Each structure stands twice: as structure tokens, then as C-alpha cells.
Image 1 (cartoon, rainbow, N blue to C red):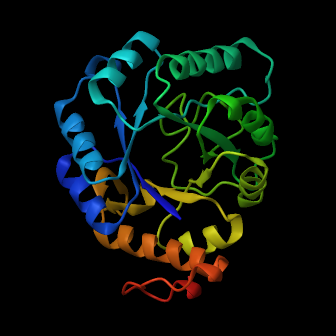
Image 2: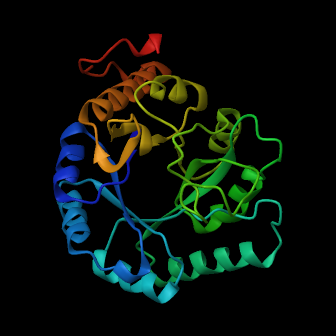
Length: 267
């Protein structure tokens, strides 16, 4: 069971994630005019020095800047999470996104590529062609990550316009399970995962791993998640819950050492 944690932007936060047992630790480049961030570079170097995988999301699409960022940071995984025009699978927008990812894959053959697959919330009225998107991108991806599409609009009304993620809401786990079963590459379940539902999520979807961002963040005085600030207790409990569920699904691998957490089966 792979544990992936976003958004880790500082060495201090990375040290915490390593101590708690995260496997993939992800950082975000928020702006194209600030793509060269020495603190994020130190963070990535530390993650790799401890034998963990670093993942990097660029929130921009200029391919030359992405190439420069790859040379500068040298992450293990480059993660693409653009919202995709899921109702126009033969259209020019999807072709452009596919072509950009393919060019980067050819340019950096040792780099692993993660592709976010948008999955709607359970009560979404407009179908999202999540499985079809998976089939299109599978040949040029090493990992899939399911993530929640908030509304029927594929290019608006997301927390970060034009990108899927950090919604704090779960996607349709039935579709996520279908994607995990159909894909020949590993699938990480994301979208509203935290300590309160990691156990149920792993049991329901049986993914290769789980990812958390919003629901393992600290909260402010109004109870709102604070970006880039992790709550170590939430992270610890989520990791333990995920491993317990995975161990129960795979009893032949033997028992795992359980950490002190609440009874996750009651959540």
C-alpha cells in the first residue's frame, strides 16, 4: 500500500512526512514565473536521500519551462493534473494535452509520469468518461491517480481553475474501483481521503495506494484546511488506517505492526 502525500513545499514538512511513513511525497509549482524554488529543490533532494519518491506537479503547461524545471529539480515523478475535456475525447484540447505528455515522456525516459484521471462525485448528472480517458493515457503513463471533479464543468469551478484536485471531496469509488481493476499500471486513489475514510476507501476500491492533501492539512480558527501545513496526527492515523485495510485484504502477507490509532473500523 503506497501512501502519497501532497502538498509538501518545505524541508521541515518533508522530514515530518518521512518520519510518519509516506512513500511518495509531492510538491507543487504554483506559478510559471516562480518555477525555480530553492526550498522545493532542497525538499525534493531530502526526500530522495531517504529512499522515498518525490513527485512534482507544475501548474502551468509551457513545455520549455517544464523541461527546465525537470532539469532543476530532477523529481522521480512528474504529475499532470489538468482537467480534461472528458466529453470530447477526439478533440484538439485532449490531443494537445496528450502530445505534451508524450513529448515529455520521450525527452525524459527515466522519469515516471503520473496522470490524474478525473472522476465525478457520486451524484454528478453529467457522465465523465473516466475509463476511456484511462485507456487513452495508459500507454504514456506510469501511474494513474483518481481525483474528484467537482461540477459538470470541466474547465471551471475547481479549486484551482483548469486543474483537478484539492477539493476535499470524494470521487465515485465505484468508478475508481473499475479503473483500478482495468488498468495495467498502478492506480492511486485520491479525492477527499483522510483519517476518517482511508480504511473504507482502501476496502472499497482496492487501489495500489492512496493520496491525501486537503484532509490531512491543519485547519484554521474557522475550521478551514490550511494549504501547505500538515497535521501530523491526521497523517499518522490515515497511514495506519490504510495499512490495516490493505493487510486485511491481503492476509497471506502476514500481520503488520499497528500504530496507536482509533478503531478505524468504526469510522
